Amino acid sequence: MKTRIILCGACGKMGGNILSLLATDGEAEAVCGIDLFPKEIGIPVYKTFAEIQEEADVIIDFSSAENLEERLAYAKNHSLGIVLASTGFTSEDIALVNEYAKSIPVFRTANLSLGINLMQALVKAAAQLLGDNFDVEIIERHHNLKKDAPSGTALMLADSVNEAFDEKKRIVNGREGIVGARTKKEIGMHAVRGGTIVGEHEVMFAGEDEVITITHSASSKRVFATGAIRAAKFLKEKEAGMYEMKDLLSEN
Image 1 (cartoon, rainbow, N blue to C red):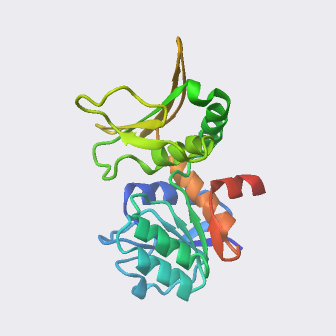
Image 2: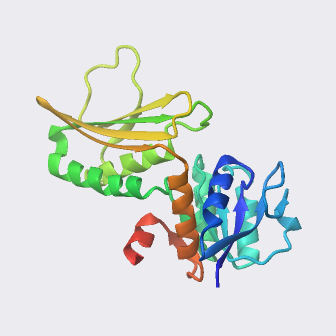
């Protein structure tokens, strides 16, 4: 039986990418969508979860961090899994997600790209090998409509680096004025916004007389749509709890 998906943010760009991929997917289908501005996209689209009539297995949420509890409560009340693919969550939002994960399966990651998740492992390994002999700077670039900075993916990469240093480093967002010499306890973070850049992330390890960079560039949002569909299939019939891309990859 196909994995039945409720698509939140159905009429946006990511919703379109997911629907395009599902059109040729024999294992999953979108049964309906949620969007503040419904339009004809080939499936029923509602403004609120209260209007939904279709049965489903998983919610894919590509909307925003706003009204998060509405989605989580619907998933809990209908025993659905939920893939949280949006970013910009506050610490209170994350605490709420963790609470709901005691009752429903929740898949949350800052980036659904397979390449980014491989990059996570690479930067952690590099940090472990290079140690404090190399300064770490992270540069992320996104389109001019992105609302949060730094990106959730950049923060995820910083966390991977910091794991190698027992969480002893602190993030420094940009630099301006007379800030003094760089310390070994810093992870520099720089956000670039412009044009239609889908997403670029660079982790630079700068040592004495040499620089190592690990980069990832997404040329299309389809890579994130692909990851979201894989996550939805993975989450179907999973027990309550928090899941992320490394769980999916280890199972496959």
